[in-house]
Length: 120
Image 1 (cartoon, rainbow, N blue to C red):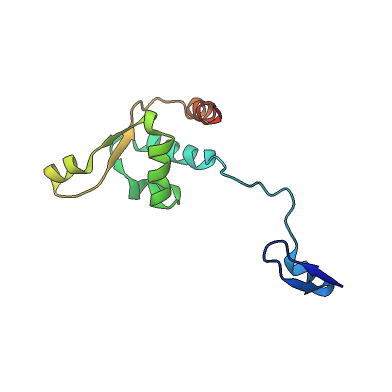
Image 2: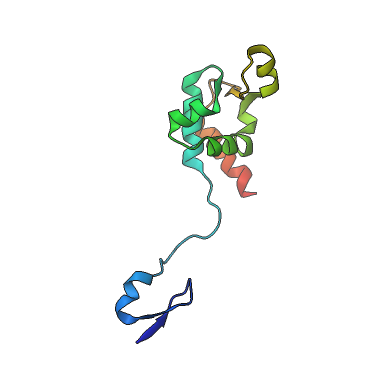
């Protein structure tokens, strides 16, 4: 008996059906990266001083681009960022320096606030 793959519309035999099994209950769309944001916030809370994106990425085992995206999109209200131009003038190195605005911040409250802001 012949079947059609829902993804590529190719015909296949019943024996090969297991290869093209479709996952059920697969969520389509963007999911909120709450766990990754929690990791970043906890790492910044441990640092207590200026740090840079690569150090955050290594400390949280994440991609530096993901860290930068999450910082700018979701965590912008809770962090301070020094412009790379200002750092370059004083040190000769181009990098964004980042730290929490308030070291005594409650990570759970921040995550709850982000959930509320992104749902509306």
